[in-house]
Amino acid sequence: MEGTILALKKSGFDDIACVQNKTVVTDAFKGEDLNNYVPLFRRYGIPVRFNFRDGDMRWVTYRPKAKMHVLDRIFPDGIRIPDYFQGKNIVHLPTVKCHIYTTTTGAMKNAFGGLLNTRRHYTHSWIHETLADLLAIQKEIHPGIFAVMDGTTAGNGPGPRTMIPVVKNYILAGADQVAIDAVAAKMMGFDPLSIGYIRIAHNDGLGTGDVRDIEIAGDGIAGESWGFTVGNNGVSLFGNMAWFGPLRGMQNLFFRTPLVHAFIFGSEAYHDYYRWQFRDGRTFRRWRDGTPWGKLFREYETHREPAASGGPR
Image (cartoon, rainbow, N blue to C red; front, side, top):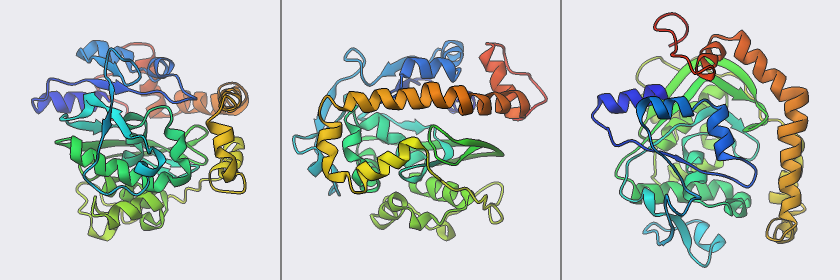
């Protein structure tokens, strides 16, 4: 984030803002604090907007020019997006990691939280088509789209919340959201065109998903294939049955009635208490205290300026 802010400012982009979103199972304020964003906002005078605060932006009905795969059917009363995004450039800051429902997640998935509200879970059964639809909308509303993807520490296993951190020392960047996701997928060891959202977006002409046709500047990636696997956790086992399996016909009961609060509570208890107490918290502390990138993260954690020399850059 700091490197991106500095590069934008150096290129003359001074009107920079951060937009945060929330889901039914995450807290934007807790996240920005624990991820050490707040000192950077203060240091560089970056205002923060929240897409769930009426004072920051309004959700308005948007009628895409592109033909939608699924969003118009999932939201028959209208596709609603934040008015704040229209006419603005956007820089996504995803990470290189696996995902229990989409195999990998990156630049295209990053729009999932910004452009859809807290009912975005309605789309999970058609998640790959949804991500292609969202990229088509982005191309209509944003004059410029860019992504800087953090692969300094990549996420193996059942992401996005129960990953195994693996130090890889890469940062990817590019304006083609399909291409950057394809390159990240290839590096993780997956065939990019076997992943639904990359293949659909490639076929729709929204970007290039065939790595053979992507021009890569900087370090070559021909030998990079890390053998990542997604695996399962307690949430994915139920989720796969509910979104894609035998319980799919009960989605309206599970997720569009007050019963959804039981699943929200279950997710919080599983991720934030059980997993963090007995597994993920320990994994994080080993990464923070035992890797160069973790130690750099800790310098931000203690609100000190990172060292001018030495350590990873």
